[in-house]
Length: 178
Image (cartoon, rainbow, N blue to C red; front, side, top):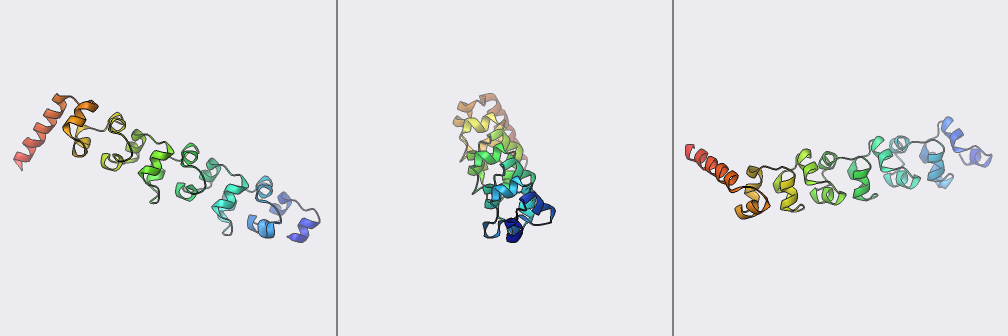
């Protein structure tokens, strides 16, 4: 590779010859940005076992390009800001699918309680990262919220006394049937 570089073969030509990104980057023959500019994609970086996520970032790939190359949100967590990951097209569901991304990470990324609900999170999972108002605004039901908050808190946030008494009465009646 060094000899080809020394006689003026550029990155695009090296790609046509079948060289991988890591072969071109070895001993920094070419910079990561030169390799990207020469036509290599984020997918080619990912498929090269000797290239890291950090290499892809340093080459200048955006979060959207990384997502298109099938990098998981958790792979990007320590390299990009959480908000960048969300804005790059990752969903609350994709955050949920990654065991090393928690509710607090999703909150810090800017996902709303409604997006978190849609992704499958429960009130119990959200209550330490989102306010009661945010959870209520996400359209969680009284029955979903009641085990986690006092009746007074639920009344203050917007549940009517009638809603609460009907659901509590129905719940008590159902308990009596058991």
